[in-house]
Image (cartoon, rainbow, N blue to C red; front, side):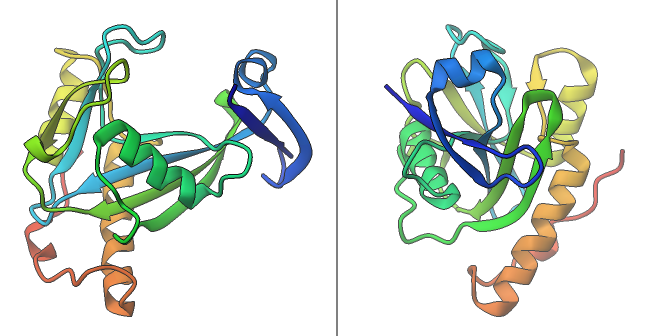
Length: 195
């Protein structure tokens, strides 16, 4: 049974109380979660289609992976675990850039977001049965177009994709200048996208 640390709503710090995941969600207890965006040097975002059997947003396309932080995990160990589980990619030695931690009142979560740069063909990612149907590299302009068109169900970003995308680019650029992430010499192909 997955156990979650309950955190203070105001600070995100652990309270010392742990609850089973289902109970924590049912009671609306404040918990921690991660979201991980994977981008390539062409500026495309690795999107995935949620399993058709999921209780929330079945079949929706999503721009990020992630999950609840369990007892004994840090945000970072959870992020690496979620990528391996959902996409079959081991991230233990690859840089993850933490770029935002926010309190999200509507779902009662403290959410830490990461971005990683990977240049792999889409066939390198292995969808987790029951969680992920398929993966695709999608240009940011196409994500914005699809999310706005209503042609498919899209969960684009966590607070607004245009803002998320600009923040990720800035975080990767800053991390690469300090050596905390791979050199971003190809980042010139990323460009602002119009709303």
